[in-house]
Image 1 (tube, each protein chain N blue to C red):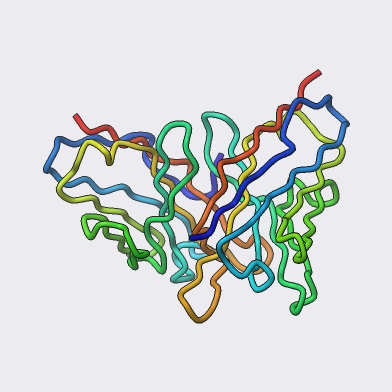
Image 2 (cartoon, one colour):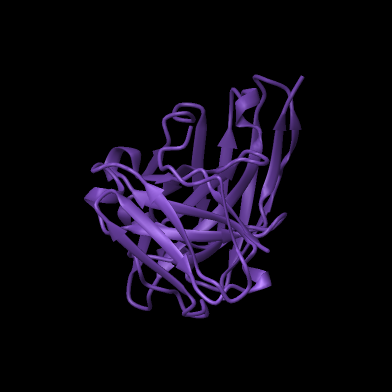
Length: 111
Length: 126
């Protein structure tokens, strides 16, 4: 069982928006601003998409946005495209002993 | 652009050992705190451990499931990261990724995993 809770799957049609939630505790998501998101296509390595809750690394489209409220972080993908179909993982800093924890992953299907 | 290439994966019996290597290029390896992250096939991601740079003592930290069995080391002259895995268990079966921290042009943030290798599959089975 993963430390952070994500929905197993979400779906949306091209052009629509979807939001993926990531629920933790005050010891991880709620306690720090160090939340990140990763995209993984089948058979590929994860790709770094969001950091510091809502910042995008260079090259990541602005269709991807992040936010946080309390113990729950969220990734929103607007203007869905076929290539967005992938697994998405959240990650949070969890203190000096645990360091970081990941969510179990969410499979995004573009209908 | 950073490039990471893992090698050394394979099939090993429970209780056995294996060493993974990660050849790094395209960034200043000696300045980076490097991490290993693993993924059980079809499952989620799990941080395995990290090693700080030499100037920070090259100290290491490990996730609880691997502490005492896995050892991370680095050879800055070869820009290579290693993961020595001993007393392997079936639950260690996973793809192991070598990762770099986020670099914003001024400093590193190792809470984030900016670049990933292609992964090395380790299968522990009798």
